[in-house]
Amino acid sequence: MDTLRIPTVTGIDVELRVAGVGGRSYAFVIDWHIRALLALGWMFAAVLFLRPSANATSSGGTWVVLGVPAALLYSLYHPVLEIAMRGRTPGKRIAGVRIVSRDGATPSAAQILVRNLFRPIDSLPFAYCVGLATAMLTRPSVRIGDIAAGTLLVYDEDRGAALDDAAPLRGVERLGLERASLAAELAARWRDLRPDIRVALARRLLANVGTPTGDASELELREKLESLLG
Amino acid sequence: MRDTSKWIEDRLPVWRDVAEKVDAVERGRSASPDDVRRIVRAYPEVARDVAIARAAAPNAPLTRRLEHLHLTLHRSLFKRPSRFGHDVAAIFLRDAPATARSLAWHIVWITALFFASATAGAWLVNQYPEIVALFASEAMIEQVQAGRLWTDGLLNVVPSSVLAVSIFANNITVALFALVVGIFYGLGTVYIIGMNGLMLGAVFSYTAQHGLAVRLLEFVAPHGFVELSVIMIAGACGVSLGEALARPGHLTRAEAFRRATARTIPLFVVCCVFLVGAGLFEGYVSPNPIYPLWARLAIGLCFLGVLVVVLSGALERLVQRRGRAAA
Image 1 (cartoon, rainbow over the protein chains, first blue to last red):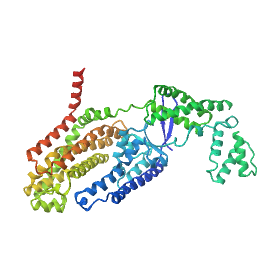
Image 2 (image 1 turned 90 degrees about the vertical axis):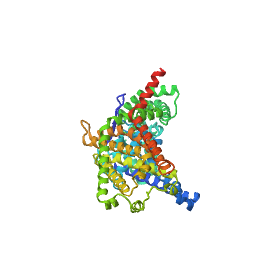
Image 3 (image 1 turned 45 degrees about the horizontal axis):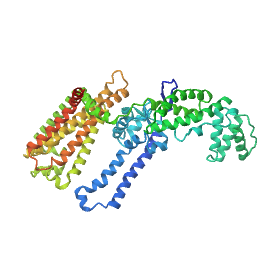
Image 4 (image 1 turned 120 degrees about the vertical axis):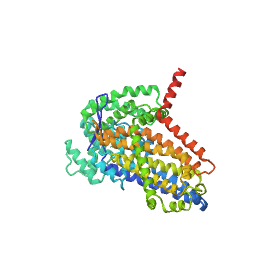
């Protein structure tokens, strides 16, 4: 997987994982459905509540009431939300990706506008074929709009990872930071994981720290894990 | 190990506090001088913490979270200050005129191509009138043959406001396409400009054959000078993008393309503003029969004069002169 290395003046470089075609298209499909639904929803609501008259049809009023807001919703969805959400959209948030500039910074409004100006080219001839092909063929997986704007899509490592959850305060003395983090994460996610998965992970982790598990039941494994964390 | 545990315990409140403060700054909230000082002090401290965490556990969630905090601090501290009004003014006063000057020869060549195509279109329709069907719709041809222009009575069909919005939206789309299809090594732009010239020449020639050329000129005069000029400029921008790809020099093609786009976009933004103006004239003035030809020509040429003044950089010189006088 490609990474974007960001040098800092402290000498501690940080790497961001570049999103590939999969993450990119996943985000786009979600966003496309949202904006299409918004545009259609507006048209439906306008017909239902505003009831453009037959007279308005002849004067172009229907076009103004129905078409213009729907077209604006559809076409301004990406630029407006990407500026407002600092390189994210609802689709990108769900897919766990965000736009950054080449130095890892939040993209400027100008960069986002340029990126979106080239959307018509990327969408040629249909279903974003040019954009997808360019993302597949270029090294940091970017479409033409990204090349023009100097931006790229990276995985949003930050989402949901609060410092308190990430910092293990129990078991570090006995297990070390890495293993204590794993144990704390497994304990925190115990209820969310499938029983066979959590049992397998707990056995591997306990074996790794030298705790015999034998034929321990799921409940016993959980207790051993908790006692490991102290 | 005990040290690591103690270290996390000691540092966690600091990380939490700094993360909270820098997140507020990232979200655009103003920060007190004390908070700013705290963030600045925290930058090297968190860098040191990242180094410690990497040494202890390179793949732990805490390490990743600290790396992210360090990056956020770096972004916030080295972010270019946002000066929206200043940036917009710079586009009109400095950036767009500078780009227009650097693309002067591109504009000349694209304009020459447009007029050559228009001449070719006019000649073709003059020699073979039946081929006008390639350039105009059946309804348009029938109206011209009946001695009417398709623009006659336009205001009876569509109100000016709707007409203006649809026209400038359409014009901006055409200009945008003239720009972005330049990515095909400039050839896309050349084809679009050539086709537009061919169509304009053909339609003018056909209306002239039916004695309607002056009336078409009357319609076009208030908006046409600026509209065509702006399309030519957008075309020149598109060709410059293609040139950057075809002749990137010592840069990679991607980098040359990125730089060419960054250079041309301010000019394109100014073009779009003028296209909105042209759309308003085309919606409110062009189809309105109360304006005589001289008034239409005066409006069109004055509007073109404004475009020339903006793109010549005269506004910046004026602002500088005033600044010096005030000083």
